[in-house]
Length: 342
Ligand SMILES: NC(=O)c1ccc[n+]([C@@H]2O[C@H](COP(=O)([O-])OP(=O)(O)OC[C@H]3O[C@@H](n4cnc5c(N)ncnc54)[C@H](OP(=O)(O)O)[C@@H]3O)[C@@H](O)[C@H]2O)c1
Image (cartoon, rainbow, N blue to C red; front, side):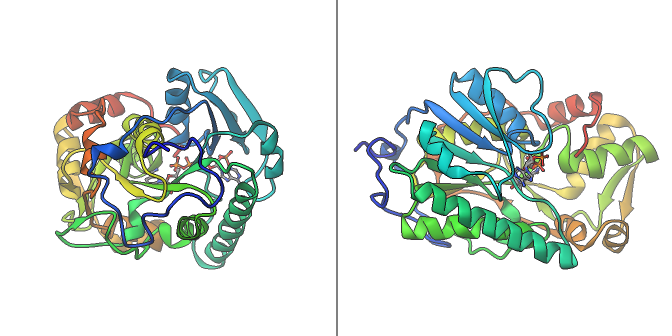
């Protein structure tokens, strides 16, 4: 079997090269063989990152099936087979009739904080354990690309955070990390070939940029800076994030995890300063206590979170060329567009 190829992968034959904190460096170009994807199943394809991923798959000519939960698929996304249902109840055994080569998993059952967070953790964990079991029972389990996040590393100071950094989930990932645990276990046990992608702060129309910057700027006529603004942020544009996920599915190694980010990290205050320069609005500091009062503890922790994201997979990253290389230009484009519901 060619390195990096799913062809010939039968249940239990993939060697897991990475468990938890121990990441294998994909520094050898030998791993970066192109893996053909004929049929992809996308879970969460209607979401913020899922929507451009559906477009990337369409552009690449990949036959795509999408599990639609509540929100409809965007109308521009065509030629997709839609199946309806919820992650925790879908009859996964029916996949056997037309099994995908790759499952892109971006679906997270929402809800966080207090009792709701505890329930979310249980629901996400059980739903994902059920999916792992169902995929492992298929004659040829598909490759799963599970989308986690860099909040799972916890907050750090100035050191570079790579895939080898131990996990210590903070903020939203305290509740959502439960969804990832069955996939980490599957990597260790080789039940299903699993790759884990960890996007950093994903920049686009929607999500955190709309909720915590764009809407505040429109309604209050200032650019917010949360806390002292000294925390490090690594960014990636949502379109590049989506393209990278497809590239990773084609070129990455089952059993690996990879951080998804572009360019050098910036301090949070630099993001505010850039937005102020582009809009002519003043920067106003909002205390983290105020954030916790207005939203919740997880939001406060997200803006306390500091991580300079790097990678051990230098060859994999070097092989990907994103389209968004000018942060000011991306910010300008986003500011011209109406924010969408995040
Ligand atoms: N946004 C970021 O900056 C960022 C950064 C790093 C990592 N991530 C991670 O990337 C993943 C995707 O993020 P996102 O921002 O694209 O999330 P999102 O916009 O909230 O999308 C979540 C998707 O999950 C679906 N979903 C929710 N409950 C479901 C259920 N019970 N069954 C099936 N599907 C269900 C949603 O469909 P409905 O709306 O129809 O329910 C939606 O398509 C998440 O795991 C997130 O933690 C995001």
